[in-house]
Image 1 (tube, rainbow, N blue to C red):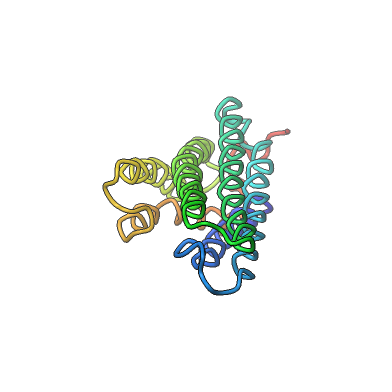
Image 2 (tube, rainbow, N blue to C red; image 1 turned 90 degrees about the horizontal axis):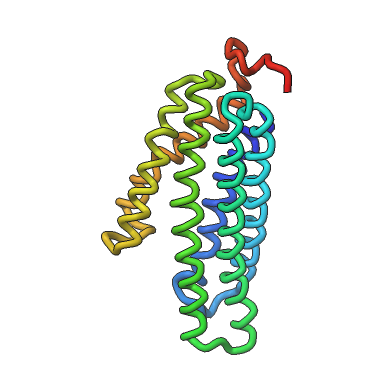
Length: 211
């Protein structure tokens, strides 16, 4: 259940944080208040905590299936959290510099940092750790296989989409990018709700194995 709550928090904070960042992402020298942007930064910090929390709570269970893959999942989640922090720092730095009369060129540089962090963390690395966890869940039978299959599809798909963005095929925040992210979003939400409502399947051997 705890892991499910962490996953649900990651979805809520990621979407809300990005929405609150929009004034700065659209124009670093926007004329409005920075309160919403600062709140977005706070939500990003909660996102980082939830990303780490989801890995830490699942590790003692999934390591029984494959210790190496489980450790790889934890490391990937930590890397994702670190990259998210880089993006958050870049946006919050814009807020600080705006108060000092920031040059437009500096603002664009910081926005570029955020864009690359957003591509690398919540896309490439998220795709990798989604694939690893989905594989662990599929093999262990801890959750219905239909849920695990969403992760097995969504993880590689978002990595392919991120590669297309990397080479300029389309914008990261676009209709195509959103459609490519839907399976991994469905994977995380369905996993979160299943764990919160039902927990791990009691029929799975790993659910009853000692730590």
